Image 1: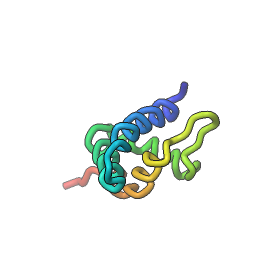
Image 2 (image 1 turned 90 degrees about the horizontal axis):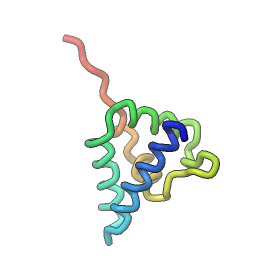
Image 3 (image 1 turned 90 degrees about the vertical axis):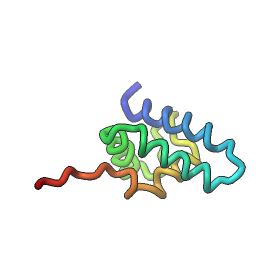
Length: 87
């Protein structure tokens, strides 16, 4: 399993948890919030680069769930790690 497959599985597990929420918008927000808070910048960067080349979130037999794909796609700017500013 390569790194992106691992990240897809992680995102799908997060998606499964938040998909149980009765309000889908709240679930999508929860996924994006979790990824922003708990994934290190290089994990988020890898996922966003993957989605640039595979916007459907599919990689062979592995793919992002619908809700995980929606959460990440709708929050690209927020999930993009900020570049450090020099003083």
